[in-house]
Length: 184
Image 1 (tube, rainbow, N blue to C red):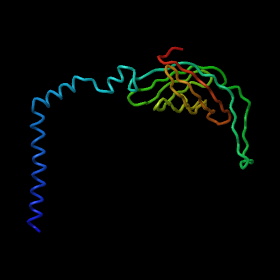
Image 2 (tube, rainbow, N blue to C red; image 1 turned 90 degrees about the horizontal axis):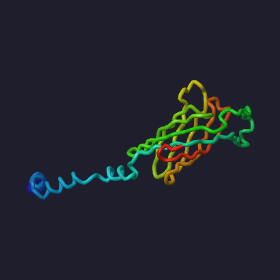
Image 3 (cartoon, rainbow, N blue to C red; image 1 turned 60 degrees about the vertical axis):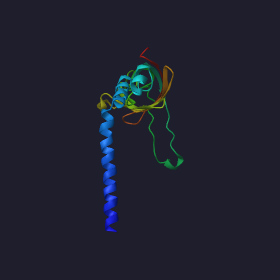
Image 4 (cartoon, helix red, strand yellow; image 1 turned 90 degrees about the vertical axis):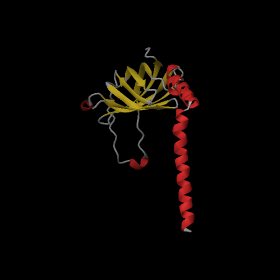
């Protein structure tokens, strides 16, 4: 049995050594060098996609939003919870927004101005969908913050935002439409 183990061990070592010897010889051969140089000359698929405006291409978007008052539904089992709606007009109206999508990572950044701003966007994009959080440029101002969800269709990015004041007493919903390339 010991002899079989030694034979198996030697056979295993010979297999790994011969495969190690073959790789450097093949790498130094003319056909392997030719295929390596042709692969280096051809653009990578991600570089080709970026240059043709594909998924790897970064994009910028700009446009406007329109915000309106929103409501919150409180379930009946929370009947002892009191919601204070101050009937505020704060955060209602039209404003500007811009965002950028990094084509390589899908990372989304942007800004929001107007009645809901100033705020910044930070999120992600995948498969034609964009989602982001909106946070205040100055968190101490207790202004509007929330979430964004959008869909990319051709040269348009359209969606909705749901926001509330930092104190939670006022909620807003907004719809937006942005154009590719920053055209407002």
